[in-house]
Length: 415
Image (cartoon, rainbow, N blue to C red; front, side, top):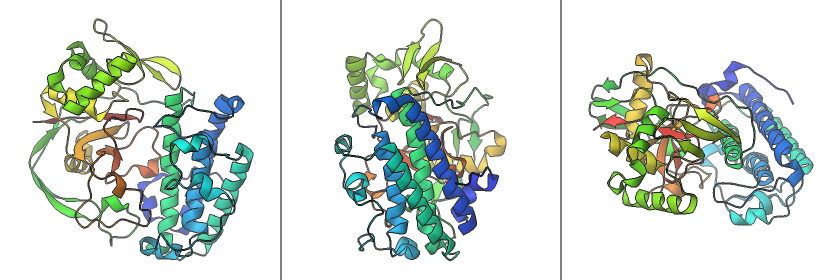
């Protein structure tokens, strides 16, 4: 397979990419996936890729096969792929190149815990399936018109693989596997930024061209009062002060469900700090956190990472501040970059619950957004593990408030 380092495939403008660039990007995404699974093979191959059955993990071979299955499901097997968002997701599909593909990798039908008991093929056979499905997709792409509808599922398959690539990275962190990734270092600390009241077009218009995720639509105007927002995410030095002040022992700083989470973690793991932290010093201020299997000392200026929404919210209450609304984060990302607003090192929890925008219509991939409305919190930005083409200031990530395995931190706003 061709490998390319062309900067054009690493741009968020890939949402508007034509067939030629999409072809290169799909190959790049697959090479990245195979590189990551190669790291897994070094660490877990002798154990046949066995990992514990916990809520935030998938078996690595299941994850790998699912990436190929998703691409084939929406492209090679989808006779309505040319209709894009107008495709009927329930329409009859062609047979898979792998007779058992749906039984193994259909995420909407294969319950999470059952993925550990499947008779999955070995790595070599899954790699063959990945190669064959990609070749099929690229052949179809050669004949695709350069129109948004006709290219919709190719763009979706690309971004889906990019998301699962990041999932493989945070899964490696959970498992303590070495990946040799560069982690975000300390950056300049600037004073909070004051942004004037404005009217802001939140979301993306369906007819403006290019690819949009369904939860980004429809674009709608929102009145945003004046607000003050941190120029950078909260650092370890700032978070240690919260811990030193008894932040994990003061019920008044936590929402009831958050306080219950604290008690459960204290009882089960003895935790009084973010996930993977071995030491967070009251006297020394030192933070020792395990990153990809290695215990490392965190620098005070590095972004705090692996915190839940509950912890982010509690820190803000302790500091007399609050989490930004997602519209405030978006306004700052667009309008305050030249003033020092820095993002992209860690995903950032916002104070916004994940709901549909007005006029929302689910795309054919029904399981992407709609099932999670009302239960998840919105994160904005990107992390060091996010592919560059995914780093779009309109992109909405979303997780349950108790997730701390992802590369998440936060920033704050004045009350």
